[in-house]
Figure 1: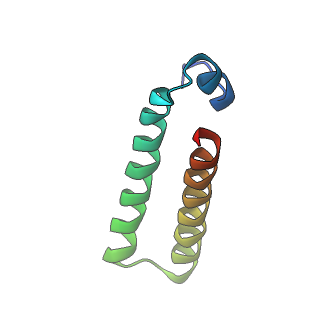
Figure 2: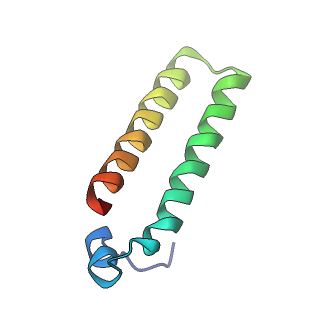
Length: 70
């Protein structure tokens, strides 16, 4: 991973419209869909717990983005 870290707050400061958040939202959606697909295929109990926790974290990140952009 060679990409430089960019804060969401920096993105919002330089882009008040919030359009710069679109790629982040798309990444979160893609991660959530990938995890959900794996859950639907069936996972071992410990993997299912990890998947549920990961989905909860993704949903929390989406909620934070919504609050920051409103």
